[in-house]
Length: 144
Image (cartoon, rainbow, N blue to C red):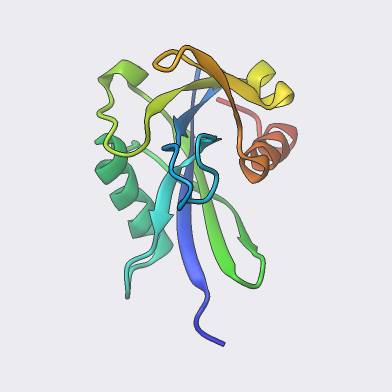
């Protein structure tokens, strides 16, 4: 058995909403056309703290003033390192370099499992694990 894949993922929040990315509609990727988090794979020799910051810079050109480790989940195939922190700029100030849309996902959107895409003018689902993490986060962490 090979080494486990590791990813670093950011839960960024602003005004009681979470920044999410609408993934491309490519059948070759996991959760195509679903709302998901920004983040990605750790490079060889890279730690999760470095990876999450690098991924945010690459994907949206944003460096959070602070990121705090939230939890780590190891399902036997992938180790997911979750971080949380504030989004201190408006989403329209971000440069979307990956995915087909981005936006703030309200708590009501998380609860119903769908978010409206302004760019596509339609509701799109949240990825099931993404929604589960957000519901867990909301139940355990005060938003500030």
